[in-house]
Amino acid sequence: MPCVARVLAIDIGTSSIRAAVYGARLQPARRGAQVRYRWRSGSDGSVEAAPATIERALIQAIDGALSDIRSPIDAVAIAAFWHSLVGVDRGGRALTGVVPWTDTRSGPQAAALRDDLDERAIHARTGCRIHPTYWPARLRWFGERDAKTFRRVRRWTSFPAYLERRWLGRAAESRSQASATGLFIHDRGAWDADLCSACRIDPGQLNPIVDLDDRGAEPSGTIARRWPQLKRALWIPPAGDGALNNLGAGCTARGDAALMIGTSGALRELWTTTAPPAVPFGLWRYWLDRRRVVVGGALSNGGNFAAWMRATLGFAAADRDAARLDHAVARIPPDSHGLTVLPFLAGERSPEYPPDAFATIAGLRLATTREEIVRAGLEGIAYRFREVLQELIDVAPVRTLIATGTALTASRVWPQILADVLGCALAVPRDAELTSRGAAIVGFEQLGLPLRAARPTVARVYHPDRRAHGVYLAAAGRQQRLLRVLC
Image (cartoon, rainbow, N blue to C red; front, top):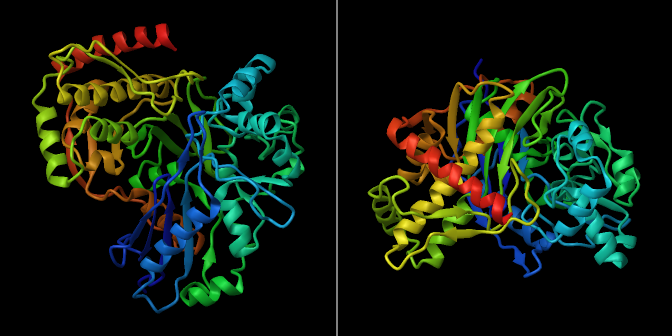
């Protein structure tokens, strides 16, 4: 008998929230809904959003996905961006804004922790470096710079866990979300008491850790009344969006890597294992669930840097104008502009994790054009991926490289630049919403209806040009030299 179950897949990203209902063939029942929201940014590197702002966007996205669906939904599967932090009081009310990975104000606290602690030992047990991306530096920042709030907080939580307590009564952190906090001991599946002490909190101020098979969620009356389709649905603990992106792309074995460019960028592998693998110091290690590990590196700048270049240089945002810019940039030969770009507007992470990274465009001349700056910026991000790839191949040789993220599927020139810089063929799937697809796969798994996670249909494969690759190797070396001087 064919499977008729349906899963509501939700993708809580750092710029928008998407929601769509999937059937067993992993095709959305309809187009789905996307709702954008904004963060507040400060000159001190702070980035925050009120929890209510993101919650409202999520409600609108679910409303849109369920607007013409009346029959019951069997499961709700949520992908949520990693590293978010919220402080709440005894009643679960937020005392802080939602702090995402883009917040860099805790740079001094990260530097102090690096001086006080053995960062390599911490990386070995938590899979995370000491960096403003992760909770330890942020907790130290609150303790030093907002002590009043720090004393009032009774529990520190991710945003999806904060929301689950409000909506479902589940006061827990998923293993997937916990693994990316920098406070999680991977081989024990528990919070790191020593590191908590260094952050001046007690492990009891963190949620209990559950896996994706937890059944401790019960929708509140308000949620059940608003969405009767979800009244009897299984609510699966939220998993990290990067892990689900790999799952949706069919990159589920060693050697199969997903290269994602959305707001940020990442290069990751996901595979089944019984123990946490050792990873190079420049990479991180997180989990999807207790049996599937995710290893890779993340860039703080991807689509956000490309969008900044377009807006700052005066290019129109319309699709037709974006295609025209893409075509103009494609006509510029590799590294012919004489520019070297450090694309670090939002700081930087893998593989060096420079705590004080800032963006730089070196080599500007009177003859430099806007299009050349855009080309150099795209190449600059590609060089950062090359650094991550060099670390990743020490874990497992990369046989297959799948491109994911709307920033890549909307361009013809950027995937070619990446293929040429990396020296690897890059396959771009037809479907851009692979994170939601991965969430849907997890939904069917938890319903006891596992699906074959076949790779999505490929729209185009970009093959590397040998001559361009040689040019880019020299340019990547030039970027590394500039990075060592300035950061």
